[in-house]
Image 1 (cartoon, rainbow, N blue to C red):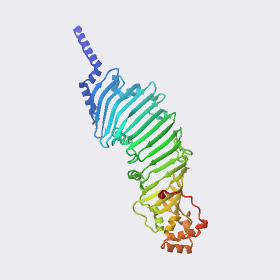
Image 2 (image 1 turned 90 degrees about the horizontal axis):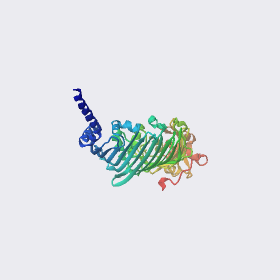
Image 3 (image 1 turned 45 degrees about the vertical axis):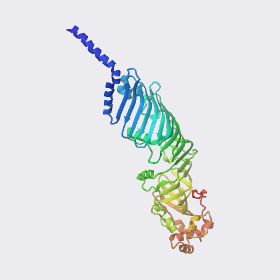
Image 4 (image 1 turned 60 degrees about the vertical axis):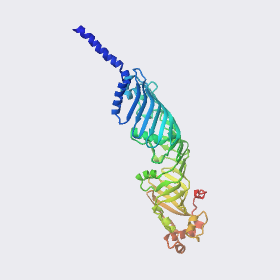
Length: 480
């Protein structure tokens, strides 16, 4: 009996061996493909279709003509190949990261259902190499939105000694990255990442609009590195060269930034700072930070020794909410402080930061195309304390009364004190200078306003003893 059972045992064993040997082929034929798609679809709500599978024991494994349709986007590609033995597909992530593996995609397309943007002719490759302790990533393709074509390119290498043991410690990595975007629709990336990772990579609404151009190189090794970046969109630009050292960041070249603030963006700011007065800008805000004298400590981060040797800020034409801090100024002008929004032109100003104190030189402003004021001074960024001067130039003073006779460069200086949350115009020093006779005269000119006596006292001494104000930066933008 035993002799009869032995051939049967070997036949069963041979059958099992044949099935195992043929497993890659069985997974590649239509019935196997159908079963695989069923298992994949059970893990996802997406509509997935695959035209052809080609599996083999030694690899590579190839998937052809892939289509994924989701409610917000669709993804398709000619082929996806994974250069690993078939048995290692059972734990793809582990084997890709622990030995050697290549994932390569050809002619992929990605489009969204909401913004008419699409990415196409995209080829990519990710290579994992334990022998070289590295990961290499390459990606390039084309884009289109509203009949406007763009392109993108990315190449990255991440490398480290015993990299696979230190994957969770980026400080030990060596990173080299080059990227370029030409007329790239930024909403494509945002839609993709929101679906895949449930997060948004886009800045607040309006921060980057429509199409973005980018050229960037980044290198990081032994806790040191540099970043060179030039980014632009129809409403924003950024140009910078940064050096990353072990404990600080400094600038290779001046950092230049230009951007608009939209109402959507300022709404986000007011969620954490309800008193933020700016509603939107009509011209771009411009910022330039010189490389000389710039010092940003990062390990540890220490605001007390953060330095900006010289920077310039151009706020341009802004639309602001009602500002109660200017009530005394409007009272002085015998005008009502607008309850709605006001337009304010602001001239560029130079700033400096040292010991957590921001110092700015004279900045002139034109409120509602009629009231010219200026200010300068300092703000303690730690305590938020303000030590500023609110200046009322001669051209504004003569609007009060043509009988006021001062030189064209005269500025009535009123101290501003308090904090950023509550600024108050201090009139005590002006009151000390007021004289009863001139005060009565100015009360008559200003319709009995107590500001008249203050101005009167100031005017009586302005010609000879008035403290000189910083010179203005002319021409003013509203004069051009």
